[in-house]
Image (cartoon, rainbow, N blue to C red):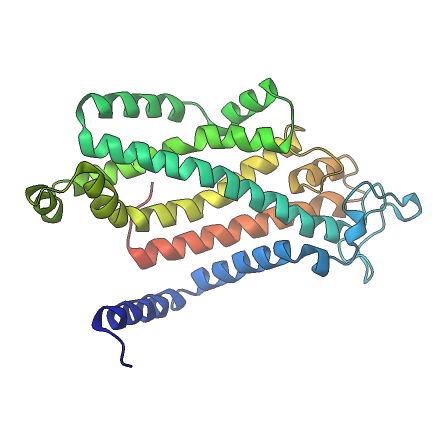
Length: 291
């Protein structure tokens, strides 16, 4: 049975997009880095050489062992394998990204759609509230919220989710404000389409490209700020293998036992770089401007 024309057109569009994407070496490298982090995190119990070192395991006879074939990243002050803890630490970082962006992006996109489409007092209320949140540095606000609550991973995720929506609200508001006067929107109104149909069937699909690029770029920043909170003791608590907590713990023994802090820091850098390269590649591929 032959392919229908719409399906064939979609397949051709996907092939063309992939061809353009793979011509950007940096984007391909970023995609490979992100996929590697996800695969390692998902299969952490199988990949980690010492999965039992993730919890409250201690082996003081092997504490502060330098990098070797047995322990490629060395061991920490409790004798735990740092590589194994970094691998499981990726799970914490990706959980943070999924939770924060999974809550903040839909909420911010919805507010941006409403403000951009309706205008008037709806726009005034939403955008002034957005300006208030944008005026406060993200890390400072996250510190204040997390400090007011108990320092746990869940509370740090909630703190980041509460402040991350505003970036997407402003972006979608700007996009929708420029799209709502397009001919296809006017045609939908003339045809008697409801506001719900126009918002979610006409305008939202045309915002998918900017949402995708912005979300990909944001993932790296969420990981960075989450690691900063953990570094300050306001995120995941020991013995949870959080990358920021590991950097903080290893910093107490610098410079003699440098591997305790350097390798978790490089793991954070690797993930952020991967998401940034992928986001830049998507931005060039989709030809969108994300501020």
